Structure formats: C-alpha cells, structure tokens
Image (cartoon, rainbow, N blue to C red):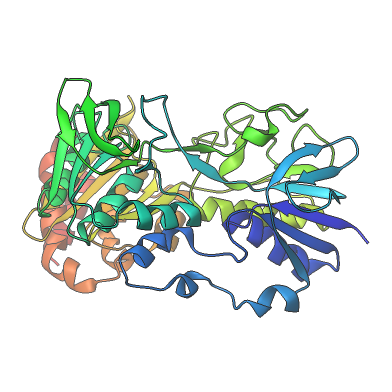
Length: 444
C-alpha cells in the first residue's frame, strides 16, 4: 500500500489529504509541528478578540481524522533524504514515504532589524504566534506595527480591541501602495483613520528595537530618527516560504520550492503546494508565489488528482481575493495593478458618505473588462469570473452590475449615478451606437 506523507496541516495539506482519501485507500500521514488539528488561519484574530474559541475555528471534529484513516504526527521534520525517501523527525522515529507533499506554509518576514529577536517582538501567522501574542500583549499600553499590509491591519484591529494604542509604520507614501492604486489606497487610509487609537505613520521605516534590562522591547527608533515608546512590536512586513529546513537538501529552491505547473519538484515523487510553492514559469499574469487561502485549496485538490492517477496541471483561472480593513470589505476580480498598464483605461466611482468605492479597469481600445476593486460592498465572484472568461465589455459589466451585488438596495440608489459618471468621463471615446445605448439605459 502506497504511503503518502504530507508535511503541513494548513488548507493546502489538509485539502490534499481529504481528496486523496476520497479517491483512494492509500496510507496518509500528516506531519505538523504547529497544531494537531487543522484550523482556519484567517480566523486566528477572532480568537484573540474573544469572538470565537480556538475549537470554533476548527472546521472538522477531532474524530474526522481517525474516521477517514488519516494519521497525524505532531513533530518537526529536521531533514529529508530524497534518495532513500526518508524523513528525519525531532522526536519521532524516521518515516518512509512513497510520495511526499510539502505544504509547509509561510513565516513572517524579518529583515535583519537590530533587536528583532527581543521579547515582545513577533509576527502573526501560526497558532504558536497567536499564543505568543496573547502573552506578549498582556497588560501593555502601546504597540508599534511594522509594515502596511493585510496582516498589519489584522494585528491593529486585534490590539485596539484590548485598548492598546497602535502606531503603524508604513514605508510607502500611501497605505498598501505597492498593491492598491492611489485612489483605493487613499480611500482605505481615510477609513483606517476613523479608528480611535490607531496612528498611521507614512514613509517611516524601522531602524532598531530598543530593549529594557530583560531584553524586552521598550521602544523603537525609526530611520528618520523618531523614538516611539512601546511594549510590543508586530512584524507585519509580509511573509516568506517556510523552507529553511530544506536549504541543504537536493531540492531546488529559490524564494520557495520550485515547481512545475503540475506542482512537481526536481525530486522524484515529491510535490509542493500552498504558500511554500514557487512556480518556475508564471501562469498568465499571476505571480510565482500565490500565498492566499483559496490557491492553497486549489493546489491541494490538483495534486490529489495527480497522486491518484489523474495527472492534472494547476489552472487557477482569473485572480481574485478578498479581505477586510476593519469593517470595510475589499474584493478584487481580474487584475487592478497599482499603476495602470499602457493599454488600460480606468474608471473610479466612490461615495464617501456610504464608504463605497468601485475601481474598474478595461482595455482602452476594445473596452473589454479587465478587472475591478470594490470597497464597502460584496459582489458575486462567479459572475465576474464568467464576465472575464467571456471578455465582456465594460458597458456590459456596468449594465449588469446590479445582478452581481449581494445587496440590491445599493444599486437601487446608485446604479444610475455610476452610469452617468462613466458616460460623462468617457463620452468622447464611446461610439454613437454606444451613446444611444447609454441614453437608453439612463432613461430606464
């Protein structure tokens, strides 16, 4: 009987295990040093904030694993001998595999800051990070966060929920300026500034962390020379693949584990999925590393098919993602780059009172819809995916926007306003037939 070993029990590894079990009777073992049972990583913040218990963010009952004959080992893999197909573990006897799936996830970035390993300094990725943050923030009054992305926003919300003042160091001139267009970035910044206790400090970078006598953080110094008192430093400058234990092995690495489109590595019968996988050749306009929840799930499903005899390549389709900036919902479908491409036109509509913004991208020659960022409302993924596949025009998308919205009351109020704004901005570029179409729509 073939033995499938999976290192990592995040969404990628667990999805692979579940789908291999659905399709086969192979022996399956999951190894993880983080926690015994799979949990929703994106919900860790709600445990800290008291909205949920840790057991509430575990999608499966504890008996699920035994019932489905998936063995679990809580241990750390020290190294892999790919020639003998053997894993050496810290506390458990060596394990032989027939096929190995590496789903080792990510770790918070550290950039060699002076004092980055002092007590009270940490990132947030794992269950162990959550436990450490619980301990590090007990009874404190001031915190500094380093980095202006989604993890930083989560940590800010967590800390503010306990009455801790937060200073947020953001290297760029605008919030998440490397990922969002400037209009979107300014819009999110306005929303964040409404939250009492959160201070955004743009174009500021961490220089060093200053300790007290017990080597615990008591302040930070910025590169501009500011000294900011704090008892906690949250490292939120992104994540990187968790592959340190593989660096001396025969496995080919770059930032992550290099894989082909079928998720295979340079080692026989070894695959990598999820945050740790780096594609040798990028797929469409997607990046070489895809470190989001749904791509991990899709990679897990894909590699399970291959291992069970139905060889598949990873085909993720159009890019999409979603997040929250406190209570402001964000979604993106297709591609909305921070800086427009030469062939792109853009249309931005916002309502500051309702805190809603839509940022559309379309081809300036053909009017084909390319992507959208939305803030403050929730839109239906399946419709945008369909429109992108069908290469629908921006006019078609706007005409049918109401059908994509979960809250029809929004477009009852604003659909006409959105169309009028678009028509006014792009009047000179729309042909006569299109103008007649718009006038017909506006008169409905």
